[in-house]
Image 1 (cartoon, rainbow, N blue to C red):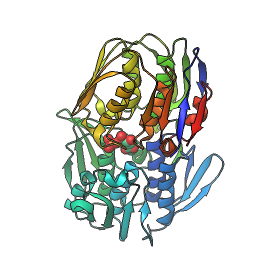
Image 2 (cartoon, rainbow, N blue to C red):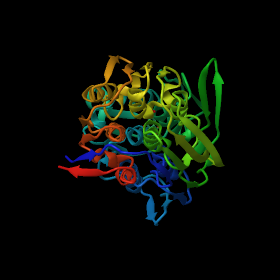
Image 3 (tube, helix red, strand yellow):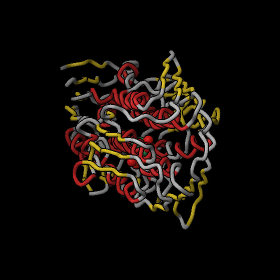
Amino acid sequence: MSRIYVKKMQKGFKLTIDSIASDKSISHRAAMFSLLSDKASTIQNFLEAEDTLNTLAIVEKLGAKIERGREHVTITPPKQIQEPDNVLDCGNSGTGMRLFCGLLGGVKGFFVLSGDKYLRNRPMARVAKPLRSIGVKIDGREEGSKAPLAIRGNTKLKAFDYQSPISSAQVKSALILAALRAEDSCTITEPELSRDHTERMLKGMGADIKSSYQDGAYKVEVSPLHAPLKPLDITIPADPSSAFFFAVAAAIVPNSSVRLVNVSLNPTRIEAYKVLQKMGAQVEFIKKEDRYEPIGDIVVEYAPLKAVEVKEHIAWLIDELPALAIAMAVAKGKSIVKNAKELRVKESDRIKSVVENLKRCGVEVEEFEDGYAIRGGKLQEATINSFGDHRIAMSFAIAGLLSSMEIEDVECIATSFPNFISLLRQITEVSYGD
Ligand code: S3P
């Protein structure tokens, strides 16, 4: 278990970062969706991090041929997805596991999905139950709700209308992938739009998918596939969730600014930047292109921050809430996060991880079942428990810029942002310990 020590900064920084890790959600999908075509897909800037490399390895075990160049990956799909001769390891990735459930549920064969101790503890009933109801045989630990999951795919899935009780892109995407193999058109409804990369990418590949709002809820209609889709030809933008750590860094360190280059500006992914703006930071979005997704630069500049309430559009900033908690901890006044119960089932229970670690930093914080209240003030130097969660480790590493921090168990950072520490070193001193 290794730890890092992040040294407090003496002065501000001005930085342009053009090497933020590529988008994790889009990278997972690009690898998986290439299996839905009969031609080779080309993916520029595929995220070379543990989570997405696990997905790529699974795609290979399902029969695809993978060629990795310096900046691109070419994936040639098999004629038919093959039954692998061993367990498929999703590592730490909920996206990997849940989307593969949907993708493989409609394929002939037997597939076992497993992952690390954190993933094996995360809820899978949210995809297993609806998939079971349309004819997928899927079982696992704890009444079929925890990994390892054993899937016996069914090539004749029943058409369905599924109303998801939660706004989850992983649930929605798993069901969209299953719907592509169903006997007739299907609909999936969620209370509020969650990130929509699956819809955008599959539409770009030629799938018949229609999105609309109905009675305040978001609805996707999916027609079954009658022929293979067009291959993907995609350049993956930088991940706005990874870039956000440096946005917070610029927003909390006086006399600082950062330009984050070629980030996805998908509206379902940049809400946290808007919250930072509401707190007083200078934030500018500069759109440069639009291919599957709007893409551009985000510039963030320091300003004294004020408290904020975050109760809406939670799905659009769920992954950024730990980093936002650092901004809240130094803002003037009491900030509140509510309606964010989903935080409890991420890579760690992020309500507990944020609350416990902020307390270690001497911050006044109150825990709710679905969020927390943070009274802004000064952070004290502390030793942080990452709980094996990459976003907790990186959020508190950024807090270290204001008052030095020791972060324990930082290997997890490699799941999404392997060059995070080298980028942080462009701002301050970071040393490693055992
Ligand atoms: C993701 C969706 C979100 C997000 C996760 C990635 C995706 O999870 O928190 O990091 O790529 O679909 P939920 O869909 O479970 O909310």
